[in-house]
Each structure stands twice: as C-alpha cells, then as structure tokens.
Length: 206
Image (cartoon, rainbow, N blue to C red; front, side):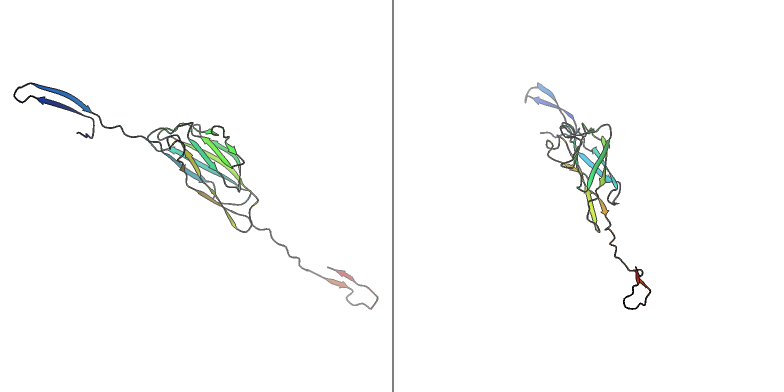
C-alpha cells in the first residue's frame, strides 16, 4: 500500500527462490486531483448612511468568484430585495452581468425584488452592479427610520441553487421632521375711543 505525496513510479520485482529468473513490472501512482469548487463573495455599499424623505440612494453590489472552479448554471443568480420605504429608479451593471434572470425582469414591483444574471463567473472574475432608489415620503415623523439592504447570489454548483451567499448588510437612517405647530398669539388689541358713554360705540382693532 503506497500513498505518495506526488506522482511516483515504482518497480516491483519478483524472484524465484533458487534460480536467477526474475520478473519486473513498473507501476506509476498518480497523486489525486485537487478538488475545485465555486465560491461566491458579495460586498454591498450605499451612497449615504443618513438621508431625508425624497433623497436618492445608490446601492453598489460587487460579486466575485473566489473559488477555484467556474460558477455556472443558467448563470449565477443575483437577487436584491429592497426596503418598503424605497422606490426603485434605475440600475447599471458591468458587461459580464445581464439584467433580469430567466423569466424574471430586472425589477418586480410587487415583491420589490431586483434580479441579475452573473452568467459564468470564472475563478477570480468579478462584476459590479449599481442601482438607485428614492426614499419615500410616507414615513413617521420625529424618529429615525432605518433602511436595511442585503444582496445574495447562488449558482448550480452551490447545491443546485439552494445555498446562497449573502452580502454584508448596509443601513441608512432616514429622519423626517414633524411639521411645526403654529399657536395663534395676540399682538395688539385696541379700542377707539377707550372711554364712551352708554349708547355710544367704539372701534375695536386686533
């Protein structure tokens, strides 16, 4: 039994006990192939961590194959579900990424979900996605509303699209000032004349 660290050639020789006859055979034992794997890494960033209603936010997703084998399938599936306090505006991506995935468009309003196809990502290859959203006006005033966002991706090599790689979570605080409540004040109140006899009148001004 042999377990060479590298590919090695062995010569096995068999001798007959009392005669010089012998037989030899050469055997080459190859080292086992190195296992390869697909591994996705996602990095998420946001343009600002503090905004007010009506402002725009830009989200950036960087995805990279940090493994040693291609990430494939119908393409690497990239998904981003945005916060209900954001309205989607637009997106851009590098040339190795496609907008939408399969029958899914790049954006589904009902589920607030964005889809991209990373196609085949080779080892070391990366792509970048940016998308813009507008902060909604319908927020509770007087408190900070925290908008969170996380992207994820998967591929056929990741248990046939069932294991997801998640990005870091980015947070943005949104503050909506409460409207100022105006209380009426009396600046002046006069009577002209200020002394009258019963039955007469005076002008009141305020």
